[in-house]
Image (cartoon, rainbow, N blue to C red; front, side, top):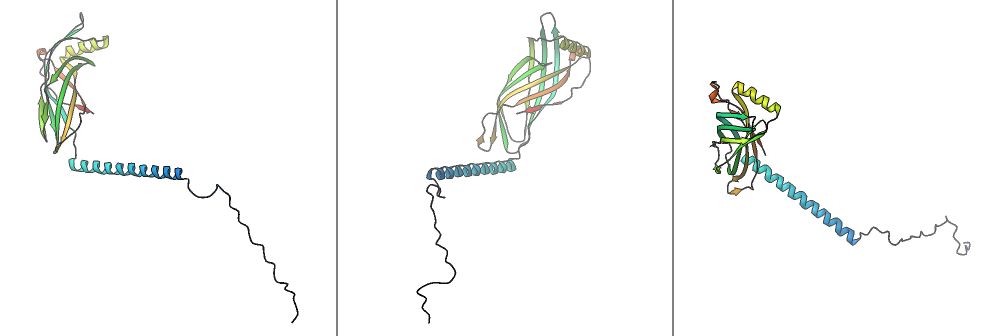
Length: 225
C-alpha cells in the first residue's frame, strides 16, 4: 500500500457559506403599528356587525308591520265668496272643506300633535287655521273640516289677476290647500319621535252664487315626508 501522506485527491470541497444578519430589517412587527392595525380591524368588524344587525331588524320590522301610505282626500268644498279687490289688493273669501284621512295600517297608529291648514290661491296664502289634535287608530278613517272665512291682503301680479278674472267668468276657481303637521307613530307600546310631513291638495271649486250646477270632484292629496 502506497503512502499518500494524508493528502486528498477527490473533488474539491466548497468553502462553508457565510450568512450575514442586517440589523433593523427583520420581519418582526413594531408593537405600536401592530396594536393600531388590530384596533382598526376590531373597529371595522364592530361597525360592520352593527350595520348587519340594524339591517336585519329593519327587514324584520318591515315584514311584520308592512307599512302602507296614509291617504288624504278633499271630498267636498263649499265656496260662497271669493272676491278680489284691485283697489286695496284684498281678497274676501268664505271657503269650507271636508277632508278624510285613511290609515290603512294594521299595526300602526298615528298621533296628530299639530295640524295647520293653509288656503292657497295662485301660490299665495290667503288664510290659515289650526285644527284640533287627535289620535288615529289602526285601519281607521278620520275627518277634518277646515273653514276659511274673512279677508286678507294678497298681492297678485298682472298674470294672476288675468287668471282670476277668467276663473270669475267661469265661476270655478283652482285652489290649493296645504297641511303642515307634526305627528308621531305608535307601534305597539313604542312611540316614535315627531315627524313633520307636508300634504298638498289641489282642487277646483265652483262659486255657489254663480248659479252654475257643478259637482265637486274629489281630490287626492300628495304626501311629502
